[in-house]
Length: 280
Image 1 (cartoon, rainbow, N blue to C red):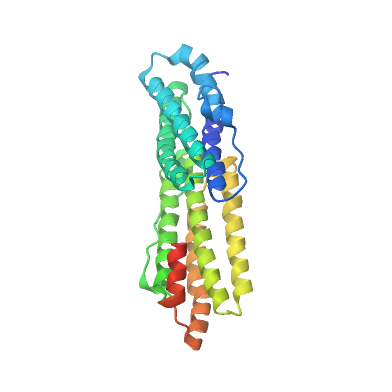
Image 2: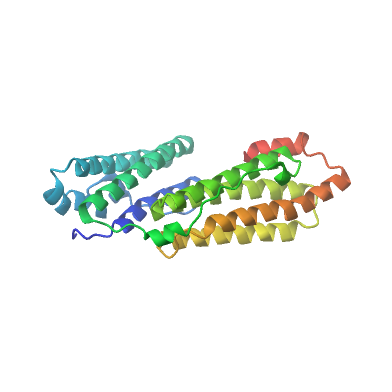
């Protein structure tokens, strides 16, 4: 492999593995290549690190750290897959969380190494200067009066701001993709809880409400795929997500709250309280 290898593609391969493994843990059908995970010298990055890269940069301390971090990633991934294969999803999920932290550190190390070694160009200043990150602040105006849902809405706002900060800090595409995935997964959890609650009370507007949820999830998933493929950089996403979320809370969600109040449905205790504990 040449020294002008596609670093972003190599980083993306690690992100895709994490996404596929998380899909397996959630009952999905993600695919993994066991041989490349168990042997850290057999994936594309490993072949370069232990081949041409080692010959050219083996004396460099940062390169040595890169080799070690890459090896540890594969060791942790092997452990996670072994736990999953043994049916221990709890431990596998715990290992995956540690892998995510380690992988992010590995991606940062890759960025530092390639910039120093190959003089990788940075994002043009004109583009970053045009992006102004202003966090969305949660206020009482956004509360709908159901504490469990308000708490979940606060988390969605927090994740939206985490995404905005990642974009503002000019993080690599794989890191922006990871934040979008976190937001996507938590949104699924929130929507599932909300829809179950509305179905339980026989809310007449459930079909339209669920449709809006589905469209939003599809948008996030599609956008994340475009970030992974380098077709999007996220610069337009934070503002869109914040406005969509606030509009959805203040309009669509308030409609079912009005319906609940008119029927005096108990939400803060009993069945609904237990429901939200399950989805928390």
